[in-house]
Length: 112
Length: 112
Image (spheres, each protein chain N blue to C red):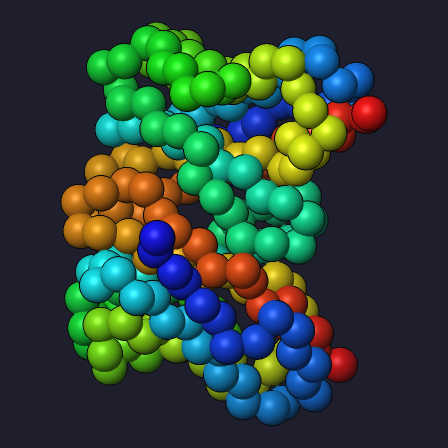
């Protein structure tokens, strides 16, 4: 079953604008991560937020987590054409082998 | 930097063939994972392994098997390839108890 579900499925913005992507999940989690995937490539880890954290920053990235609503958001500020990619949230429920459950992703297009 | 490599970027096989997808990581990670990625379905876990010779089924193990004879290598085997196994296959690894996963570049498999 899909634990993480991203919203929107696709987002198109102009360079310099901010991009916000949302993720909802169903069960209790240990942490939530965001990954990025350039077209036809593997995923790259962006940021991890633990269940006892509410907000985290890394460069132009800002992630929030609301465990009461079982949701997270990823904000990319001052977007660039190079930010064009798919973005996935992944939840760690603490089951064996540190397995993650990924959502379906948001396709972000940043137009120059 | 962690490096995860996959044996092929692109692979074309015929229905009924036995297919081996190889994944190697160079950072002594305990956990290794195989996913398949399809449009609209996100990443789905096929199998994972948290130690040599150990394996656990993921969400969609049917039609697949795995082998982990050495810590650095995790193989995905399609016993008798079918057209519905045409997909992007992604390998990942992680340290024991650490949620962040490192991904290989992916193998795009086409079964005709």
